[in-house]
Length: 105
Image (cartoon, rainbow, N blue to C red):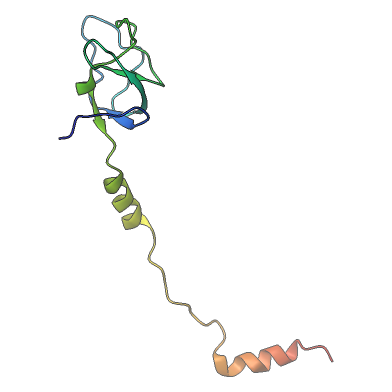
């Protein structure tokens, strides 16, 4: 698993369990945007949540994983309805007849 993160990247929380300290509202399964990194331990500084136990308001990087956009794209494609062929509501042989009914002379 690739654990190198970049500023601006969106990550998902995989571990929001508290230890002896507070987590500042971190929630498992929620998505967060990386604003920066703790220079001491490489922790993630997030836009949407700040860790009250860190001098840099950072969370341990191992609490997060990258968002798998390919997985999300595949799921969206799977749930979209299939495109259907164009179905003629009026057979081509009768279209001229119906159009002539609406023609103004």
